[in-house]
Image (cartoon, rainbow, N blue to C red):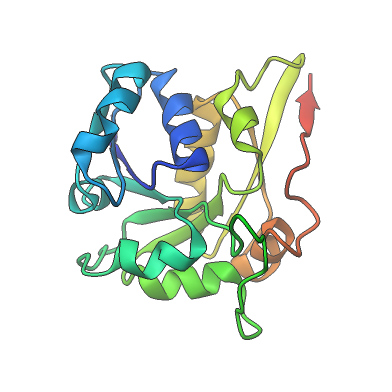
Length: 200
């Protein structure tokens, strides 16, 4: 079984960690304050989740990044080339307390993010659903809660869709980043914060 790295232990990173912990999937989670600050979180999550450094998280088979937008450059600085591994972009170009959209100079946030993770095959996913829904049982409403994803590498998207399915969600491929990244980006996209369920 592949091990997942999680960079960022805020609302989305912790919710994703809970979702994979519920399925017994191994992961290394990291934040800017170091492994010691995550002891209580990993104790709550269970034995499949370990605290580590950002370098340790970034070395795993699949890496999910969920960090406040302004802190992304620092969080990803100094990491080695990802050499074709999958990096999941779960970030949104906005943050508390002002929730003012970041200046992207006409680009999509995933395009900007991709420049920070050289050598990675980036898939946009896990950013559009509210954290508390991501952490809950995805079948609790009588169907499967929907998660959207997009990317420019079909094989990488298939792997992420497999993970989405393993977690009990229903994945919908929005196509390349130029289309799907725009639809799922918050703010600006039409899909964020929608709690959609695939029935049957």
